[in-house]
Length: 303
Length: 138
Image 1 (tube, each protein chain N blue to C red):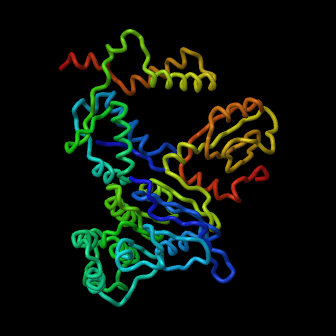
Image 2 (image 1 turned 90 degrees about the vertical axis):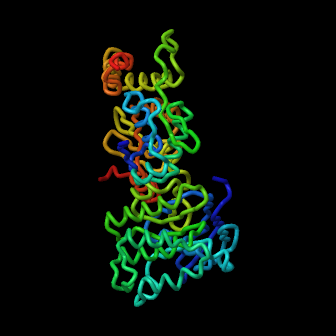
Image 3 (image 1 turned 60 degrees about the vertical axis):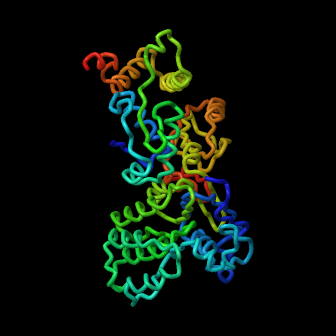
């Protein structure tokens, strides 16, 4: 894997009427990685992906995809990027075979074997009309059209939304089958954090149109802890711990969520306050919830 | 090869794989010279990113637990010889783990015999029989 960026966003800003969807989003996606893009509804994930795919024009900032401006992609560049939009299928009345026959000749590297494997895997008859397919199968056709050209960069907007567990797993296995050779980059958004933990090696969290957290998933997990500080009496209202993202009070305990956990420093702070300290690792879901709770620092002592 | 992995755990998946493989080697459930699944096969079986499996195998090789033979696959190596440590030298990895254990145990208020019992129980769990006795049977 090289350090060359596959996608680079700098200060990308986008308004819809006067509502900001992106507020100066900076994001660098290294080539060869699988990036899970996380964020709450309305955080700007889809807009960011649409800017990368060249279907949305930012109001400010720069977008570089494979070193180029996606709005000025020529045919050759467009063949190198696959994009699955959040919703919709093209030509709902068309048969699957017809749609494939329209798309495949546009791509010199179209993978027929992969196409047949995906149709089989998702139980899609080429003769079926798109509108007759289940939601999951329609998504699968979209995925097929995005990946059969063998793109270097794959942008998938909520590929697994509304799919049942079994089809979702098929989706994940399909994506897993595409990576690992170190050259192909996959960027996908998802609300299903257990999927992200399986497939992504990097994550980026978007919060209100800006980057909140980005890095290798393993590094983030290694740096994240939930620390329980138990006091003899009333705990202090505030505590200065490195990397604090959320703080909760429960009786004589403070529960602190940290990214950038420093064992020695935490022990020192706890000892100075006369508190007993216990640190636990936490999964992505708990971390995300703490990160997104009311801008991080929440006090639930009233509850 | 059965590796129970929990992707939702706070422990990175590559570290979970490493720990499981190390346990299997130490317990003799993965014999020296035995072939491990390929990166791609294990990734598909576990439903995880191949980069994660590759990272785990790479780290295991660095630790001398497995050996990657180019074009052939990944093979388990024998656990280090017990005789080599007969003089009582403690390898750095073991020393560091012992320091962490003592810190945890002391903070939890355990006595030395209680801590030793915890170590013993874990030892029996991982290495049910001493490896040397097992070799005599064969």
